[in-house]
Length: 630
Image (cartoon, rainbow, N blue to C red):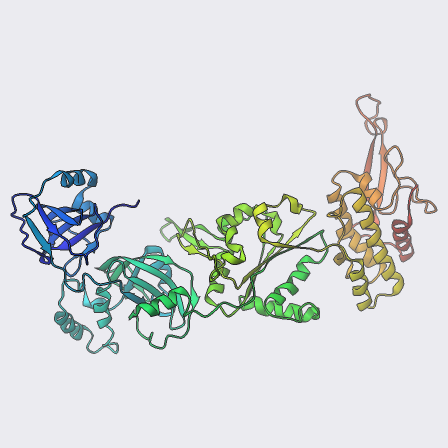
């Protein structure tokens, strides 16, 4: 259970009560004032507290007192629910002790007064819309501080003014202002009470947040400035929902403040007045496979398909690249790469330190990549969005996504049957994932097997395998007009390499076909091996050069060196060199603790700046493809 309520009620609303009473007084409560049993009540008279009481079985027991607590709120017009600071001023730090006293006193059944409530006090909840400045400029501060505010600062504190006095003041201060009709909104603003519901709007076509008023009108000059104007008239608001959303054009939302019919408010907040999300079902996809299988290349086509480009799968590369860039500039495609240090703070939100001119360090909550794109998608409901996460398996998924992993499920998205929101730990914002946001990831199986991935992530993503494709390589080389002999050799090299890798390692540690797409000559094939294939094989078989040699087609002798490849004269092979080392040669003496070693290295031809004649290269690659054994 939460903390019991505490209220301040003006003595003018209570008949037959006097602070001169000799003892406790029982006050009857009308049904229009819903106070829970145990709620504390302070009776106020022009800023002076004249009675402290507690609700007992729909009656109020009051002890007469007399002191001035200097409250932040004024209950002159309606009862005000008290917040922590005012509660302490009135009831002290030990409210439980006061309750025990009030619960123990006996009250004569004939000694009573009646709380007389004006019509406004017993009213039902009212509904409002208030704009946080032009284009919602003040919204971040409203959300962080839990307030809503309005301008026209020259009016000063209007909490004690009658409506006639207010009109006279407004005319005196703003009669020559072009917005002369505007100041009356401050009078309406003063009528907002705890329990009322508020929407913060950005223009006529979007809502920034929805909240519940926790404290009524207060005057706070100098605390909150918007575009140079002091927004001194404030209310406290608990912003329950801070998800921005597009709505149907509200033609009558031309002023800062407007009271809304309950039906209109419920339509807007419930989604009935909102622009519907794009109808495409949300997709969570991971493209996975060995390095070089075209995952990053194909993720662009998949992103365009999800954004409505039905021709993307067969479109020319230049079209895909142009559309990708256009949509990235429009904010509909967001790209990021995970790495081992990538954290929740970068992806969702976290605290960032900033140093001011005086050298003082201040911390502020900064939204991460995922939160920013989700907020944009929630606001632009007619558009679809794609977040592409390259190398998604390189980060600690559970730590990066945190509590948001559940929100990715289609039925948990905003506007769906099991819509779910969570409160973020730093900003305290309520956050949900809109259905028009797709998440597409890529992962190298050579880095980490799918079986090792977080189980929660695997349940929420569709995995699409991308393995080496010799046919796709052949088609690409035909399209590039590569001659048949070279094309056949390149395809054979890929096929034979992967056949050996599947045997020596596993299917997840193969060589992708995309590495060979740019080959146009034997030297181009040599460069692919020098720059990509040989380093990758060394990574696969870290320290196990004999297996690298086997993958390249070298039979190995008992001493660990490669046998001479039949008919080639290359005793150490063409891709690698191997030299047998013994302790006598290296150290100058024999010793039983030392054994012979084999020094392996990459052949000079297959280093980045290596060179060789085409005939030599042709023979080397023929050896790779054709050698079956010693």
